[in-house]
Length: 87
Image 1 (spheres, rainbow, N blue to C red):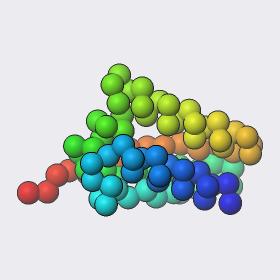
Image 2 (image 1 turned 90 degrees about the horizontal axis):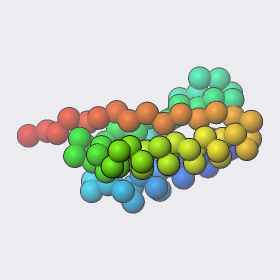
Image 3 (image 1 turned 60 degrees about the vertical axis):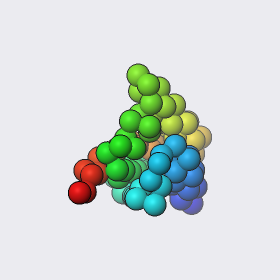
């Protein structure tokens, strides 16, 4: 349940930052019951918006995710998968 709430949080926050939210795909894989890996696939032009200047935005998102997971004795990781623009 906690991982579902974390995924919902990530989905909401990331969609607010990007220009093409309809192309975003957020998936979750569980390394084990106490560790989740979230992968977000974005259009290449949106990757910079999520990373932010000097990486500050992605660091903040990852810190919030880690803090939320730690409250429940879990770990969570967010990875960005770049989607190459189609012609």
